[in-house]
Structure formats: C-alpha cells, structure tokens
Length: 487
Image (cartoon, rainbow, N blue to C red):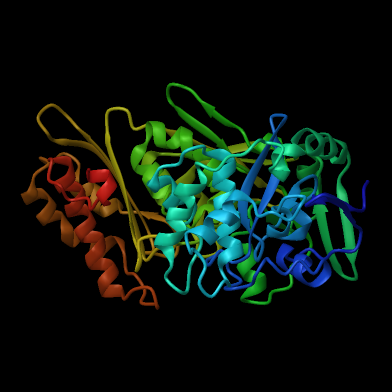
C-alpha cells in the first residue's frame, strides 16, 4: 500500500503524503506553490480563469487536456503532468507564441482572465495545427472575459496557428519523451491511502481494487471528474470523507463500438466519448458540445453524470430515450439493468452497497428518428432548465409503431413520459395527433418552480418540444442553427 500522491508540476516532481481529500488543485498552486498566474474567478468551473493543462498517459501516449483547477482535487492527480501558465515562456524568457499572439492582437484588457485564455489556447495549439473558427470558439467556451474582448482573442488564436517554431521551443514538445518516462515510473501498483486527521482519500490501483475498497467503504464518495462534487466543496463547504478517486483507472475508460451500439466506460469523459457518439448519433453529439465548457467536458464523465442521479443531468434523458443499458459492478459481480430503472427517487438510485457504475451501453437509433433538446437561459455553459429527448419509429404508413420520450428537469428524476407515449403509439404521425397529445404531459409531469424556470414554463416547454420534434421530422426548419452550421 502506498501513502503518497506523486505527479509532475511543470518540470518538478511532487510527492504529497499530507493532502486532504477535498483540497483543490487551485489552492495547492496558489497557496502552497505561489503559482499565482492561475486565478480564482468563480470557484465552480464556469469562468476558466483557473485553467491549467493536465497531461496523462493514454494507451502509452501523453495527452494534455485543459481543466478547471478550482474544482479539480489534488488527490486525483497521481501520475499526471500539471502545466501552469508560468511554464510556457522560453528558456531565455521569450513569450510562447500563444502569449505573443495575445499581445500582438491586443487580446488582454484588465488581464485577470488572460492566463486562463492562454492555457485554453495553448491546449488547442497542441492538438490542432490550423483550427477553424468554430474549433477556436469551442475551445474557448469555458473561458469568460469580463471586458468582452473575445474578438481579439479569437484573432490571436487564428494568428498563432501560423506561428510554429521548432518543437524544441515548446516546453511540452521538448520534454515529451522525458515526461512519458517519468509518468510511467509513477504508476501505482498498489492502492494509495492517505489520512489527514479524520479525512481520508483512496486511489485504488485497479477496478478490482475499487470493488474491494467499496465493499469495505460502502458510503465512500466516488469521484471521477469532480465537475459536480467539486461544487459540493467550493460552494456548499461540505466535508467529504472518505473520497475514492477513479479518474486514472484505464479499465473504466474504454469506448467499444459494434454494429448495435457503443459501450462507454464509467470513467470516459465527455470529450473521450464525443467522437464515437457524434459519428453515429449526431443529435447527441451536439448536446455534448453544450455541456459546460471544454474544461468541464475534459473532466466530467458520462458515468459520473448517471451515478450522480441529478434530475437535471444532461446525459440520462437522451440515453433513456435511446434505450441505454447500465452495468453495475461489485465484488459479487456485474448487474445489468435498463438505465431508466436506475433512478428511483430524488437522490436515490438502484445501487446496492459496494456497487459502482462500470459502463453504459447506448444502442444506435438505426431506423428511428432521434432528437435531444437542451433549454437554458444562455446557449453555452449553462445548467439545464428542461431537457427533452425523443426516439420515434414509424411504419410505411407514417403511423407511430414506437416512441420513447424522456425528460430532465421535469420531475425528481430523469423520467419517461409514458402517458404521452401511450397516446402516440398506433396513431398517425400528424399535426392533429400532436395537438391532441399535448394535454397528456399534465398526467406525466408536475414540475417545480425554481430560479431556472417556473413550473408553467417547464410544462409548456415540454409540450412545445414535442411539437418541435414533429416539425423537424416532417422537414420544417424548426431547429435553430448557428451561422456557420447554416452556411
């Protein structure tokens, strides 16, 4: 058994034997290491001022992702490479091309958010040689500029794609082989356990070790991406112990495709699942693009979104509509169930003591029509007020042979609209049928009023989304598209 967390910070090996389970990377950087280029703006993963890169080994290769240091726990960093803005300048102090482009294009005003923008653009610079404007905007979704200086920042991103000196200039490219070797040497063969007073964190060495840990600690908080749990700490000031980190477990990070669908491991991030999903289920891919910013999608996992059981989680409604199947695992073995059966009541899921989510199988909607709609106050980086998902099968006579309708934000759990479905099955797929079915929503849902939306708004929106889905299936241009999607 190990009793230390080891990772690389810029160029330095770090070993921590005294770290709390909810200590954030942001606090570690600023308070313990005095690396103050990483800022605290929102403390909830929204503004991007705290953006850093975290590199990890994926299939033997080193991959870097932008993350929010304010909600990333230090205990989740074992065998990773953390890169802050201080690491970018050249050996002679010359600015990195990303930094220089922001200077040349006047991309910094008050300067508070600038280090976060630099790190997001740097992550894009590492992965895309000539990004399109849409790719630039996607990379910057999770960064907010309080001075509204976005256009110069986008121009800097476009300019920097033309500024690529030799790889020896870039600190990560120059040291890539060395960093890979150092990270390999840090891989833990035993479960890591660290205690600070009554607080404990656990980093299991394998999925089998995870099952053993949870059999002994059935009330432990399992943390994959911490995009929600992080806010329990930074906003609710909750004390969590023990915390079990699983984001490093490669056994939970596989994406396996076959002709029927895709199996997504519980540790796969939204970013990691995006390519497979968007290729076969484009509507679900578009939804993923609206979940948080790039940093949140790099950290958050579909498995965690399911296990958390939030009634406004973005992935359960479309997965329920698609007929997804969940696999749970414990020392006793595996247990499979339809995803919709996993959610029992608010804050309660069908997970037995010692069980954890292992994967979810998502069937492809082969001969059916599928859509998912996320309704929010702003388009990007906002929490859902209502999310509706629809899967429709028609026969040759345009009669509904099967339909699955699922909603989030309308009940205490993600829930199917079974009364609505029953009203539609066997009926002709016409506007008259849709109009006659709209009142059935009142039997399925009695939503609440909160700061995101009123009950009346939610109920009317759910009905309107059914109408919108109908209009799109018959060819009406009902879905609003961004200008570059229309062009």
